[in-house]
Image (cartoon, rainbow, N blue to C red; front, top):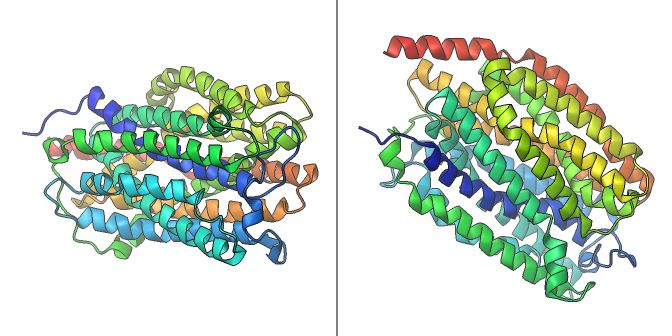
Length: 451
């Protein structure tokens, strides 16, 4: 008999999401800001590391930094199914997922610090190479932690209620990690003088240490085999990946997910620029605005959690898509002043609550149905297939953002927000194809036959 899965266990599991979200937020929210752009009197830290790497476009309007980020996401996407297949087939004594998380937490945190420390020698070419190698390693380590971690969402979500609950909890800790990452300039300001690189490096190191501890807590607390009857999969990695994409409902989900993450990555990458270049506010306000958005979003979590079983996840997700489109549109026309930052923050809290919780539950539903229909648990691969697809969208977004904004003008930053608006609307329309009722009905039917 396996131990019962409780909400306490799910909350402890969610702490790991806070850790990797914090590390991811440091890189996705601040690398472009510190490695490109130019400082001004109000924001002296903008582009503080820019002189260390090649800034001019290499081909057409594509910059080295944009290409490195894009290649990093593509590399990350390719390694997802490899790690997922390894995890699904593993026979470790500690389980199929936890041993990966436990082994990689510390190296993952260390390489994050390295990204802000090592590519700053006197040799620009060497810095370019170091930045590329470190970013590849960063994404590899993130995959090694996150792919097995995400597989546990479906495996600990043994019921529809638990799947929605665990998706809610990890959404909360994900937003908490992302929000704390936005506090990087504030923490650096407390540690030293503005315009100096050392306080920024120290702030990154402190946040990375917090993230590392958060990832280790569930890795050592949760005894995987006490709760999950995990049977290794026999399907090779890429065969398993192809099987995941052969699932019609999963493909329909992924179509919209790729476009959504393309739009969201454009927006998130540009957020610090929207606030400092369009709204003309200090970058230290980024944390306050993000905290406001997070606080309102968290207040909405219980509402989303309660409405999802009643209205269905599909209707709420489509609402989230349209809401984010409105946020992106407002950003594209915003003017000068802090009030614009609060308008965007308040409006974004609604789709953040919806889309932070429910998409993971949809993937868990599809993985559960596949397990019931085939008798083979390939949860890791379904989550890896999703991340494989949306990271391609993220990679494209990195190229588009750095190419469109190479002139560093207000018009170029507004253009990225307009692109995000249009693509997010397309994602909303595509999600109408997803048939949630069919999936849940079939799960209920097969579980009934099991009993």
